[in-house]
Image 1 (cartoon, rainbow, N blue to C red):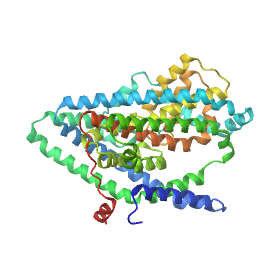
Image 2: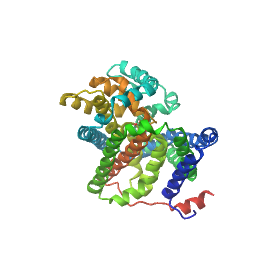
Image 3: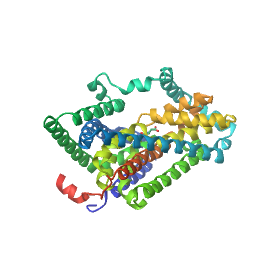
Image 4: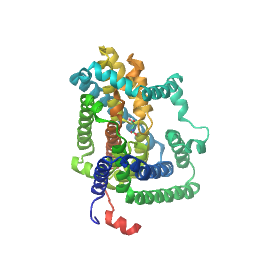
Length: 435
Ligand code: ASP
């Protein structure tokens, strides 16, 4: 196992987790055993990843921005990043709409299955609708208002407020650029050191990654709902996965055309982050690893990665936006509703905004889907229809969300001449260093 590349170790961990759980759930005590004795290790693994998200954002963003030396450079990166993020999200929603209109997965759901699904998942759907209700009642400028924290410690105290921490870090970094070099030097030195410490912590966490994903996948398999309703939703799931797969191809093409890097180079560099995104269903928890892979293995300059990736993890969710478009039209189809072109164009706008507003945590895309449904006049209780299969689809869309962020970071870096050759530290050297 000593020489195995990281992604193989993670894949082995995932496969072992699935097989282990599949065998154990055959016994009456199996599920309980996994929930009590295996799942907690998965939770610990996710917690450790989340634990370093805020220190990482603060250290890398402040260091990255202060390294830029001038505000013009910052605004150049900023505009390009946001431009690419919005463009890829709109493309993703449009792709989702085309697929769901061609495949028409809603037509495959019988009257009986619909009633069964509604009865089984009404309660959980209700909880999501209540959560979304709160967001809907807010005024139109509330998201903007929420960007600015009144207290940085309070903002950093909850991982749900990552955008506020990003705003603080950018503001702080700008201040650091503008003060005289002598006063800035010790502060920059501090954040640069902090950044190195956090990166080393990520190395340590990655040692545990194969075991972490083992526990996560074992718990997912043990707690999965029955498969019969699952199969009824097959065409819906196929539509989402097909859309995500096409989006994936689009990213590879974008990287090839705009960053001049081959698909295999990109895949080899980013795959461990994708596997973690798949296992954790959280872009936020994956962020530390995405950051490391993109800088060390894809050659993106740290200044660019530290700006583009934390923002991307919180606002750029192409996979989520595509899923929201497919899910909304699927629900309308099962209710026998015809959606006009105008309504579908409206979905492009609301799904783009809803994906930006979704938190980078498991299941968040489904909460925000309620807003897309409400805007399009589709019954919100329809959420119950797609509940059974949401977790596996969440795993897939999170993988795409993370891949989209990495793609944009390469394109932005290349556009300003900051995409270099990767300097990967061989995994074995890393192990030797750590142990
Ligand atoms: N789990 C997704 C993410 O963290 C968000 C979603 O639910 O779509 O990127």
